[in-house]
Length: 120
Image (cartoon, rainbow, N blue to C red; front, side, top):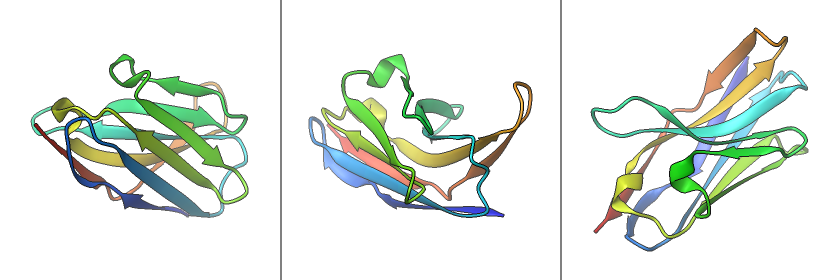
């Protein structure tokens, strides 16, 4: 079983920055994607950014140029640096690890979520 433990988040003023981190533990399949999703009140969970084991990153258009995702494979840890935060970035941020078994099958694990609040 894989466990994800998130840290970071909190309250920040618009224009500020925050860093999130997420450490994965357990028996992790070597081919995986780690990422961050977020869910604002009344909205669906959406992908923020993801990164493969060979550091290919993908970002939602809304965060491009402001957020940077990175990972340390030796530590099974993924990071999200967020700058120029906007009130619309306010959400619960969830860490995700997707184990890629085939082109059609992946197994997903989720962290407990960490709140990010950006005040205007």
